[in-house]
Length: 190
Image (cartoon, rainbow, N blue to C red; front, top):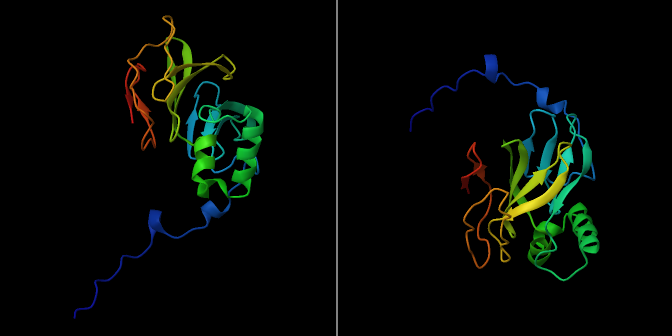
């Protein structure tokens, strides 16, 4: 047996401190378990994907503004608003992550990327259950439309005046966790 080496002293940039204990909690009871965030550098708006299936817009101070997307109605027969409220309440009670069928119905957006292509603001999203989709945003960063569902059970065609891509066909999305997008918006890595 030999004595372990002497540990380095915690000085300089690795010196213990309490800086991170001075945080401000934003969006309490509105922003539930954010997984991914993306920013529009021009406006300062942020977007967060939440455990209740929503994608929300935040202002530059991190405060909740409004919902951008909720894909939960794709694979269920419940009324959209009722399902959205149910998902939010289950996430608040910390039950949704333990309910596979519930989480599948609500969706779980896990990755977001914001990109401006040809003067169009696009929010790319990847959902563990509902696949990859792109949301066009207006000048105020509010949703105009979902222009392309790239991977889902119900892949839709893209209008000819929008971004085009060959849709990937899956019987159901598998193991979607995060994504990245090329600067021109033509290649999605996941």
